[in-house]
Amino acid sequence: MARDKLDAKQVQEALAGLEGWRLADDGKAIERRFTFSGFNEAFGFMTRAALAAEKLDHHPEWTNVYRTVDVRLTTHDAGGLTELDVKLAKRMNAFAGR
Image 1 (cartoon, rainbow, N blue to C red):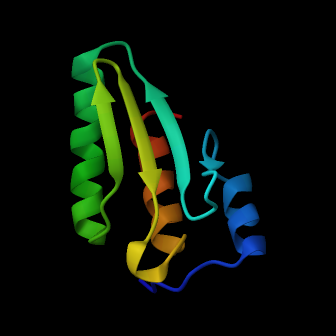
Image 2: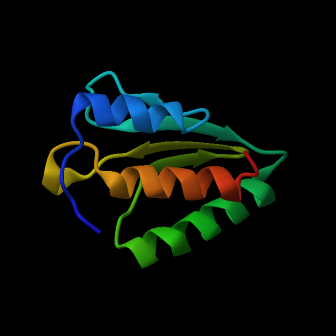
């Protein structure tokens, strides 16, 4: 998959189709907080997302505290957002049932 940086219009179009995601303050990433019923559900989500990320060779920046998973997606070698970020965000939404 291409790692070409999305332009501003493409970013806005992508965000329109990504429920719960927002553009980071720096404009170089998208972010979302996922909240689950407990740690097991959060960890299961992270496991599914990690396997998908590995298949895409595109890995998230994330943190987990008990039932909350905060995610930031960006493509460092492109200096911003690419289709890889959008694709992984869509998969994460699906894994979370959202």
